[in-house]
Length: 132
Length: 137
Image (cartoon, rainbow over all chains, first blue to last red):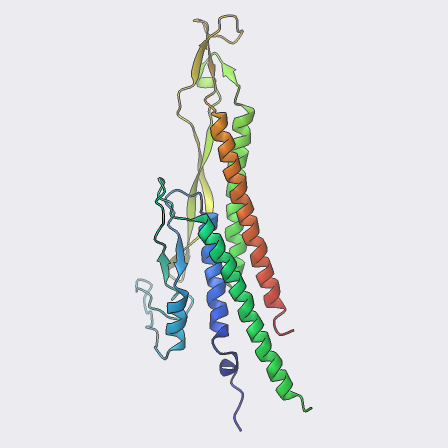
């Protein structure tokens, strides 16, 4: 008899939730700075981070604050990338408000989807626990 | 938790935009101010925004926005010859404040839209958190 492994039951939805909440704060920073001169919009490369976290790749350990972060799942390991602007702004700001807003809405939806999946997993487990 | 960060970030955006709206209303209210002395004249005020960089575990992650300073416009105020005006200087000239109403109107619309954006972000983040609290139900 094997012990139930929560990591296996939840799959990568837990990682996805963590990433999506981090992405929400990055996108909200972009939107808050929509009128700040010189601000460069940033985003997480969701696909790449999730891939490196679900593969067996081990993230490189940071032993000094001056080290460059690798793709890992620790709090500081999130690699933020700068957006390539579609249209240059005179004041150096690269926030495209429409794009950021739609990305934020999409991210919120994905977050809720991950939550729904996790709830489903829990419900399935509860069903397995009950004897009839 | 990153989602709690959203409240701070959107809040800082709202407060910065509110400051901008404040300067716009002050500029609009004083748009028709006149004076016989150029130095005492009301000049259009504009906030300067900057990003608050937050240091998380040695990594710089950008966060909210703040109002760095409020700058006065350097546009030369217009001069008019009106010797009958009680405020006129000894040569009979009065100066009108350098507020550009059109600019201020556009600024106001932009500020209010940005404010609304931040409110929307805040509401969405709130819904996300409430859904998280209900996890497993």
